[in-house]
Length: 137
Image 1 (cartoon, rainbow, N blue to C red):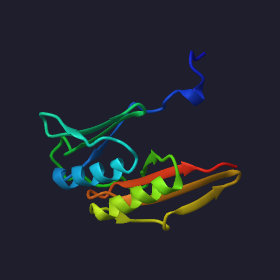
Image 2: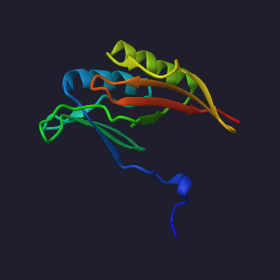
Image 3: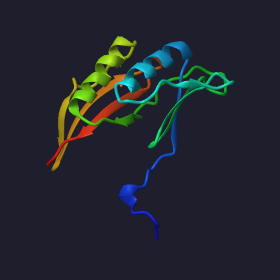
Image 4: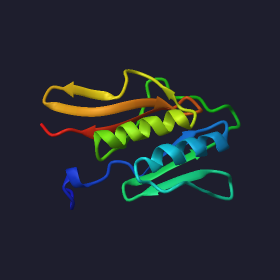
């Protein structure tokens, strides 16, 4: 059915998050994504900021309808990290750049046989984010 096995394909092409203060949001994402080895965002002529990697694109923008941006209740955007240390660096960079810690402190969570090292933050607009590293079984 698929030319490429599911585990090797990407599920998402991009994620767009709303922001109210583009300068604060760009500073936050430049800092947190740098900890994950992603280049600083570029601003397009419409004032939107985009971060690109081989896995997809993250965009930050003021809402098109002119209403204030708000964090999705129950929504989370997860970023892949290569190690627990990278998760910790992401979390520290986010706090230093105006993010707010949420949920439990960074650490190991188990889901049956699946072990994860993760951390959560809210960005300046209240969007809930996670950096996650899958630990060996």
